[in-house]
Image (cartoon, rainbow, N blue to C red; front, side, top):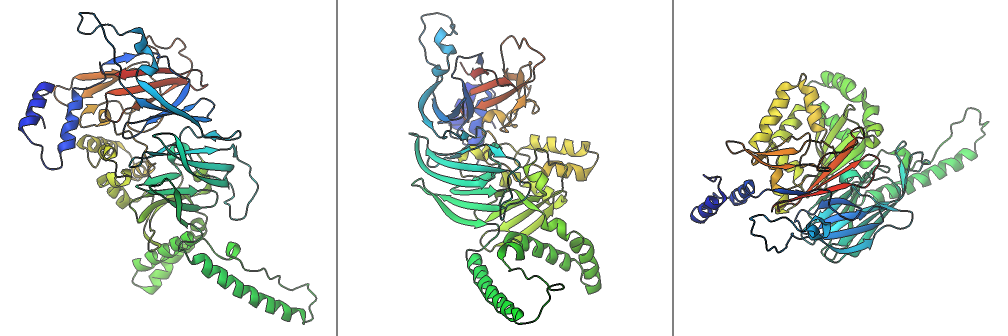
Length: 536
């Protein structure tokens, strides 16, 4: 902790005093109390693009063309100019209000075909190799025809293409195509990246595709978890199906030699993997629940009663569960969220029952099972929130504020807990965010709650659109006397003339420079108002 708030004193103090072990980065981030965006350029002249985000290392700004066909990548630069004025802060030249004064376009590449569109809310970054993962898809079909193995009620997309691209030069390295499937691409909800591993959840066919991103830029299939859990499960079931087919054929030949009027006879259907068995992951789930209830009671009579009440009574409800979302906890464990079909494809599933499963990919065992109101899972979430949110080895993402690494965030969480009328409902509300969406938070130091205080209803590190406010958003220093450090105001400088239209805004903060972009637009998507906030 610096003893002074003056930047000159801090530089001198840094030279004569070393940081405590493991605290050098946190101490360096204290300098951002002095290095804040101090000026705003309103309604900047810029291309009519959909600006997505900065990469977490700050090297690239990702954007898409308005027709959602092309990827446009920019390199952040800095405003430079000369002036012969004697003023300390001379007026900015006219060219400074242009977008290309702050960003240099590197390239533009077409990713989508004629009938496909780029998903503007999907983007994952592989920082060690500077790879970017993008997605294109055709239109969503809500009333899709039934398909073998598909979950009824889940919509279908004729073609989903994941494109792995090298951001340095825009070269497409590999693609992976899913046909007549459904992957939730909004805000990376259906895809999770952990180091070089990639998990893609097929909601329609209830399969978790695990891929590895090689250094060469190839997407390699590692395994698929869903109907089969082990690599030889399919071989085992197919060999048994052939034996069952032979037995059925022999029985059918014997039956034909007997006299039968057919009135009261039974129709034998051929057993198959599709109609004889639940999926592998579902069978492991049911087995785990059964064993957990069995081990709760030492007396056999009480065991039977408990199984009737807790397992068999809800058996069909467990069978009907589908996978909603998945995330890596580490290289060997997945956190899987189960729920009903309505919650898997609906926008608001907060009120629906849900369950969380910790799955070991190496042993194919289920390690833990929780309901979405489980207090023990909430305690883990409160104390070890970083374990859920940190999904890569990138140093920039390790300092995103959470209630397990920030006293201020923990105090705010406890305030909400004490304010809640029902602790069970509070737990459900908090656990709705699990599993976390991958790379969904900004690592900018201006969202560090140990440095700044701001209104999280108006702005936060989460990658989400928010309702725009005509009043500027204030960032106040945590250091006494808690002075106002800077303000961010989206939209026109004088405010919007049309107060009736509902406006939304998004904020793109650079991960380590005092630079931010605010984008305001109405729900009917007219040209956006882009402001650039920077330090002068």
